[in-house]
Length: 303
Image 1 (spheres, rainbow, N blue to C red):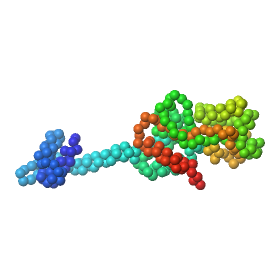
Image 2: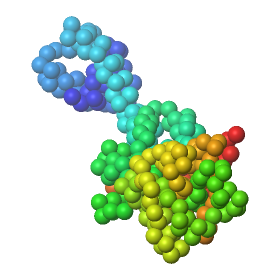
Image 3: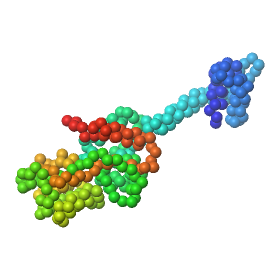
Image 4: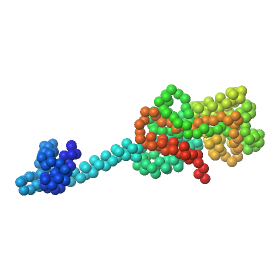
């Protein structure tokens, strides 16, 4: 149904005068009459009773006049909503993230995003690093905050670096490493090591092994759990020395001590999203993260 014809009919029905309706709409009266006639033909019923002196509504015309207001209002709301979606002001954002490295900024930045875009629904899903990549790649997540990953299947994904995190050794307070300001990688040669499983964070796992090779020893891996919190649990139980990114230190029990490893090696925290996703909501969130990173707000102290 042509909304223009509905608007023409609505003007005539409200004015009950073709001349007044034509002046109101700034159109020629013949064009107005023709539009109403075409609308009647389309609906298969008369909407107006016309005489030389008056115009009145038929029962069908009265019903249509009532609905016209609803239809036009609904049309205008649809137009406004489409424009909000196109500008990123409305929609849904499914965000995957890894917990400890993002805990300092994720809540505040999502809060700021919701303040700026209150009509956008943000769905948060905490996953392991590799799982975030998989879910972004298959479209189940729009964007991810995670560690780097390897694999040809991720070639169509784009990333931006958020931070480089140095590795630390973590151990019980009474450990011999506690007296050192920095722990040389080579000193780990004789220690059972506990690191995150390769399947959960390929980039982090490979970086640690590369550091050990450069220190000219083959690491003795006591445990490779799937969760970084389990790495700390093993260390607390005395099973070995843990190797963790610096942001994980805040999760360690008070009975544990952490020291930077030397020479410094780091693992990245990245933002990842599909290169072919044109979503304005996704773009809006990326721009906010970029703004916070450039202004030093991602790791700003919030204490």
